[in-house]
Amino acid sequence: MASKQKKRSSELLPLIDLDFSVSFSLLDLPPVNEYDMYIRNFGKMNTKQAYVQCNEDNLDRDIQTEEVETLEKWTQHPGESALVSGGEELSNLIHSWMTASPKIDSQRLANFLRTACQVIAVLLEEDQVATQPRKLRSRQTSLSISDSCFQLNTNQPFLHGRKIPCLYVSQVQRQTLLSVHGLPEKAGVDLLSRKSIICVWNIWQPSSPQKVLICDSEVVCCCFSPSKATLVFAGTVDGSLLVWDLREDSRMHPCMMITETEWTFRVPTFSTDGILSSVNHTSPVLAVEPVSTSLNSDHSYGLSSLSYQEGIFCMYLHNFRRQFPVLMSSFTFAIFLSLFPKDISQRMPQTLTIKFLSSNPNHFIVGTNIGLVGHGTRHDLKVVPKLFRPQESRLRSISITAIDFFPFGKPLFLVGCSNGSIRLHQMTSEYPLIQWNDSTKGQPIIALQWSLTRPAVFFALDASSNIYIWDLLENDLLPVAKQTIPSEKVSTMTLLGEPEKANGLLGMVLAKESGEIDIQYVKKKWALPQPEESDKLYSIVSQSF
Image (cartoon, rainbow, N blue to C red; front, top):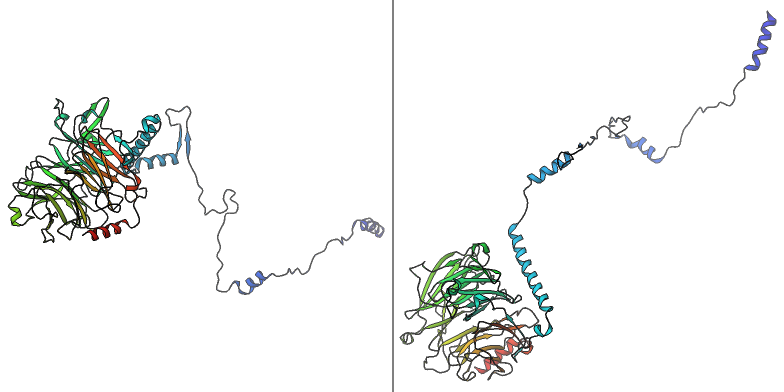
């Protein structure tokens, strides 16, 4: 038995052995960094640990607090309509398009299109002129006082045979011109032959008038509104005052097809004919002048019309509100003034023209048929002097045919007379500073106007179609230039220019009896301003007085 146990132990002993390769650490103490040391000492002071449960086994999202975004789409094949696919996003977009109100300013769009069309038309016309043969576009001027000229296209069927009694240039938009075309010499059977016509021109686009205005009565005078060239006023021989609103839709007015061109003929927007019978009259309106200042707090502006009835000077002041798209007269009143002393009033002087002082529109002056210029105010205040007389003390039958105020701030004005004399007055003196008697050799003055770019220069037109240029710095006794229009008689003249620009362009607009309108750009020496020219002029006229 003992031998068996010994044998078994000897067999098992080689199979049992200790593995000395296994080892373990009794103490493992890693080094502590600064952050752990800070957290261990101070990290738990006044703090409380908060726990957030996160679904770490969610493979789609890191945390279950984020909402899963989903989007539904659909499609079908073949499609039953043009829409073969869609979804929530497309449906919401279509719904927002249908429910959202469009933000479209139709008024601004219309104004932009109107302005853009006019600019494009001017550019196309300039391009057309540039492509013409050189002989056609380099038309030599026939006047020695001008550098260049061009002609407005009045060769329209409805303008044939009509004389031009009046021209007017806008005070704000200086490229805009009004021309009044009277009744034709030969009356026709068509409707237009019995109507007066006013053409609105843009001199940058001379090929055709911008707008054509018509009325039943013969027009004597016209003007633009003072703030913008959007309203046209006209006085007629039957005493009515007409107004056209150029902003009206052309569909409100009659149209005619003339020589394959459709023309819109605008009828008056407002007329005093047949209304205001208590203060109305039937005498011809001799002059219409805008009052270019605000009359009260609602930014209205005034218009003055002048007439002469039964020996009484009548000035009608009309107040118009700017905010109304169609012109409305808020009040109209007539001032029957006696501007003259009793001894002069007994001669029944007739008033012929009126002008307002630009620096103070309360003051106005009127020309008469006895050589005197009356001075008054819109509020009938006392003024000194009350009359502006010629150098001759006795009264004569001389008509004041033209008056023009100095446009450069000084209280000066020019007076042209039917005997050819020209007077330079200041508002504080009864007698003229300078008077020229023989410059036109007795021919009546038809038009008289200061230069818009040079303070010392003014222009005159007499009844024999002679144009005179005066430069008072060069010669204060005689005109420095005289130009005769040999081809045909000139009925009236006005000036256009842009004094705020330094290019010095100054144009003369000449209306001929044949109905043609020429624009002559005068030479630079009479157009470009000189340094301190206004002060030099005032010094010269003060010494003359």
